[in-house]
Image (cartoon, rainbow, N blue to C red; front, side, top):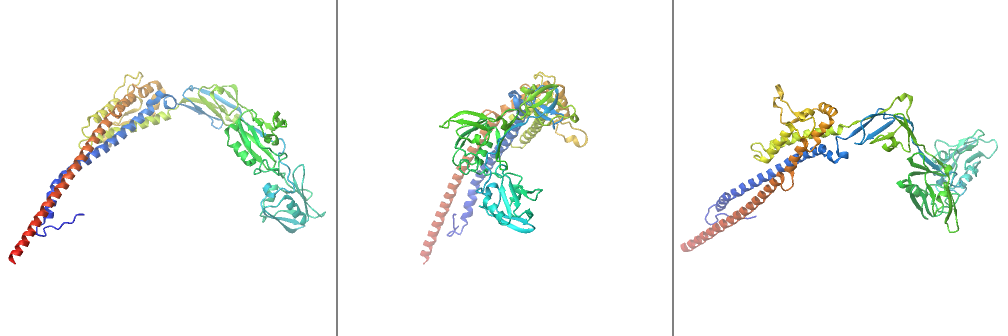
Length: 580
């Protein structure tokens, strides 16, 4: 901040004089700054216009990119229409032939299931923890001849503890060594027992499925086994019939490894997260068995092989003979442990076919370019079910709508920015581009080789001004008649494609003109932006230099007035001395 004391000696307002003189010079800077802002505004307008034109190019490319084929070819898209999607659905590629087929489904493909032949787990005994059986801690109510007794089950209690607790209240409890079923009976002949009450806080009754029998005793509906999913497989007290060894085994095309810390849950998670295993695994605590469900449909076995571990043998899927060094001498897979899935059976126009999957590709169905998904077996009530292949016009219609919208936006934008007094007035390259686009949109295109030469012949035409309120309609814009477009597409799809999609068609010519304007370095937009950037740089330099001159001028004025005040002050002092 500069602090000045104007005219202390002379009494003159020299500061105002300095500001007035400097303001004359400052007006040149203000003029240059206004020029700079105008140039920057033009650049911003140019950028917005480029964006609008680019959007039109993108909309056109959605239609003209058919030359790249595949998903880019909107003219070649086909729709597969099922008359009953409860029975089957279908998709069609561009190679599908437009016709109809009769489809009937006699059988759906199912998956193979492998389950341990026998329980892999030992039956629970007195040392088995109740928590390992899924039984939670809490209170269990038992009525003996109507007298309420309560058994408290602790978190670390074993089956032996529970049997002792039952005995203490006059109930004999035991687990059958062959079936694994828990039985409860009154110790005293003729006594009546009733198990469970609504106030119980343990899940004992639901886990065991304990139920009253005709003779007044109770019997569990599920067997109680030692092993569970959290068991460490190689542990000596894992609860399996045979101790599992560390090593490898194979399911599907995937090899799995068991180490000293691997639990059954670990292995199940590894199997379920490995696509090469081609199965999902599940351990059933109530049967002590491992189940593998194939993820592939059809009548094929699940590949199960023992490796350096005996896991698949213990689980009841394989039988392996080894030498003293654990080398495999022979191995068989238990076929009886697997329930084979079935192949799908269906007919196409009366011809019987089979598939290992409910997803039927064209090499199986012989319907070119079509994939069927079988959903349900056909019934008499369903009647005839047909598949119809026809051109999918939805994507093309949407693309044409977007083109019309982008075209109108572009015509609006260029007209707005080149109008009298607008930022890009007298930009002939822009107005020329607008005229070119209009000419292509309204003129006849005779080089595409099709029967259609005008966009208006396929439902894309300029808006028509009518009487009354519609006299203000912008006739430079396009409007889209979807019904007329679809009719033209149905009557002569090749000519419509030629008019819109070919390089020499209407949109191809538009795209070429737009590409020229958007071309890097040499295109209109890059050239104009380069010019504006240069003008901005030059004007900013002028503002800076002019500011420096004004700053120097201000300093010069302040120095001169300061010298004047000093001289006047000295003269006043000399005069005062003379008088005295």
